[in-house]
Length: 123
Image (cartoon, rainbow, N blue to C red):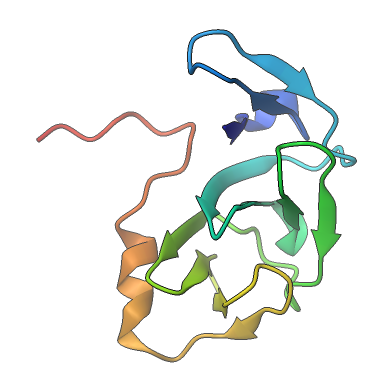
């Protein structure tokens, strides 16, 4: 399991085997990270300046080209792919590597996720 941190710990990634004890990992960036998702045996994290990072096990992390400089605020996995959103663009990727602008209504799954540093929703 991996999680990104609030911008106060820019670039920090944390991993845990049990969800209770967390260890900081090297993300390879000092950019602030805002969100992370897991799917298809792949972690995807997003953050400042259109940054997208991928990892198969929470370490190491590899940067991917998003095609935007807008902050990636949310990342979600739904169905057969990953979705991101920023203030300017929504992206979709079936593999976490190649990212394309998303035009479909499926991006609503991204708007229903929460950045890691936001308070938990109350139901």
